[in-house]
Amino acid sequence: MSDPDPYLKLKAVGTEDLAVISGALQDAIVPIGDISFKPGTGQFIFVANRFCWETIGAAKSSVPGSRIHAGVTFSNVVDVKRRGINFCNRSAFLSLLAATCTNLSDRDGPTIELTFSGDTGIRLETTELLCHLEDFGEPWPTQWRPQHAGD
Image (cartoon, rainbow, N blue to C red; front, side, top):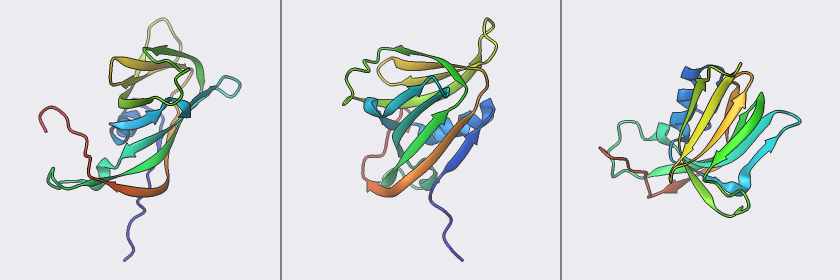
């Protein structure tokens, strides 16, 4: 029997789907220089260095984990707003806490909130939720497992 594919390839078209992608991206490190919005295509794209939570399972907290690069694309984006992020500082990093989807009453489509540590965030106004996450490259071991209150 062969080993399962270690790479994630996920698609979100609803809030439940986005919650799965958000969980996979929790504590991902996102270089500001690897964030891009292409207004002509309506795509918001970033590359993340994500912790592989799915490989930990029920393992004890002392077990090291691994990280892998992941490409994330949000389609159907009509506007992007930021809070507390200086896009001129292309060498800085953000730590992604969550990706959530809400419908605002004054808009036709869903709004995606990317919440980062340090009270920073990005809001994507969309006509329809469509997100893809795909791992690439080789995973590498890390002894630094993200910790949260209550762990």
